[in-house]
Structures are given as structure tokens and as C-alpha cells.
Length: 351
Image: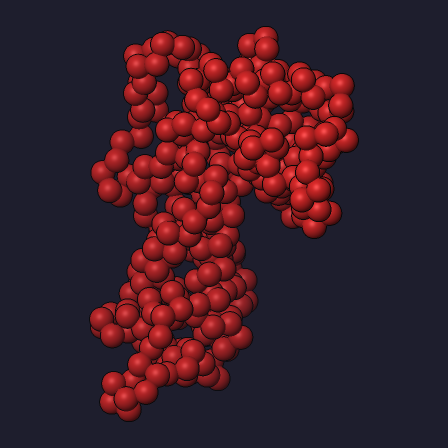
């Protein structure tokens, strides 16, 4: 496919300004989408009056190959940069990209025993392992797919523009990746054994403040750091509000609770919200346990290991030999997530 067409696709997908050099003016997004759509019609042998059946058959033909290749390239760039604009990812996730030649195995010479929790595919099946120091461990990967068939047709029929189509796929992947990172980390860490003096239970109250503060102090001392971070869902972090009944809470912090629902910090300790998600569209089960707060050291240590296959592929599956020749297109990418606990941490469980 010509470089000008590829550039148009990338510019539209990334929201860059597009110029018509011959007319010496900036082209609107609507104009650019119409231009790209007309190019694709020509490439696929379609027009604005083509039926859905004709569009489906064109997308199945050899003429669509270059079209799909560009979609794969654009989605890869969107995914690569999108999920890293995230505080949790930058602070707690060590990522590797297989397309860049990175390895899937990790090595540690830590003296303490490693606790490894792996998640497989979409099933959240955790395998708890213990590895001695000087061990190598490999993060397994699974193939994840996002259906994009209807979005392609919506673009070609003018009901969705190009950037919306690309964003829909990239956002679906980013959400899936973040869901795996948040839930696997929180749930795995909560299942691992914690040493006495680093765990607490029950509702937070004035009477429990000393116990909670001791956990923070113990985590800092055990890791030889001066600061820690308290992590949990918004529902879990809100339970720290009960400690506002004591003298340490300032009027400004109480005002912040009124505005945001949670404290900004706890006596100088940073709070990091882990977004809550539902496991699926049934809205019946939540991904992250809101009955636990984790206390981790602020240190050059990233317990979550993320392996990215680095390549997005578009594949289609035939729904059956039906009259309208419907197909389902999927964007597929291989990924893997594991939580490796090599530092002492604390946790408080409310129930």
C-alpha cells in the first residue's frame, strides 16, 4: 500500500493534523475520513452503495490483505504507548516485548523466597510457587483476542470514523491488559502468606490506628526505605476515612474527602487507587477484592511482570455457511502476566 495512504491512516488514528500540500490548507477529520474511505472502496472494489454482503466478501478477499496489515501496525503502536501512561504500570510493572528480542524468563539473586503467582488466559487460574534465590522463572503467555468485525464494516459504511475504529480496538486491549495487571497483582498478593507484624484485620477505627501504623513502619524498615504506598480499590481506600476521627486529619484532608471520597495521603503516605472492574458484561463479579489494602515499599522494585508478544494479527473465522456470509474478525495478541513478590509487604484485610 502506498506510503501516502499508510501515513493518512496513521495520522488519522493518532489525531495528528493533516495537510493538503496542493491546496496549502489543513484538512478536517471528516474530509480525511471520507478520503480514506474512498481509497479503501477503490482498493476493495466497493462503493458507498455496496451491501453488507458485498463488504463481507471484499474483506475476505486477497484485496483486503494490505488493509489488514496497516490496521495491525496502527493498533500495535496504539497499544504499545497507551497502557504505559499509567501510574501503576510505571511504578510496579516490569515489561518486556518479544518483538524487540526480549526474553520471557527472569532471574533473581534475592536471598528471600520468591512467591510467584501466574494467571493463565482469561480464567484467572493462579499457581502459587516458591523459588529459592538464584532462580530463573518464565512467564507463560496466552493469546488474547478482541472482535473487530463489526467496527470494520461500520467504518466502511460511514457510521464510524477511522480513529474511533482504531481506538475501539486499542482501548479494548489496554483495558484487558490493565484488568489483568490490577486483578492478578491484588488477588495474588492477597493470597500469599504475610509475616506476623505485617498484617491486620477488621474495620479501621481509632483503636486500630496504632496497629495500622505499625504495619507501615515495619514494611519501611524491612525494605530499608523511608516511604511506602498504600494500594487498594476506591472502596477499600475509603475505609481509611474512619481514621479521620483522630487528631492527625487536617481540615484540608477532611475537605478532600468531601470532594473525592478518599484521602489524598495518609500521614504523608501516598495512596494509589486500583480501579475496580467487572469480570465480564454480566456485571456479576468484580475483578479486584475491595476488602484488602496492600502496603508496598517505594523502591526500585517492580513485582508485576508483563510479557507482550509485540505483534498484533487480524484473523477471521467463518460463522457458517449462511446466506449473508457473515464473518467475525479478531485482533489477536499474545501476552503474559505474573506477580513476583521478592520484598516484604503488608496488608490489611477488612473481612
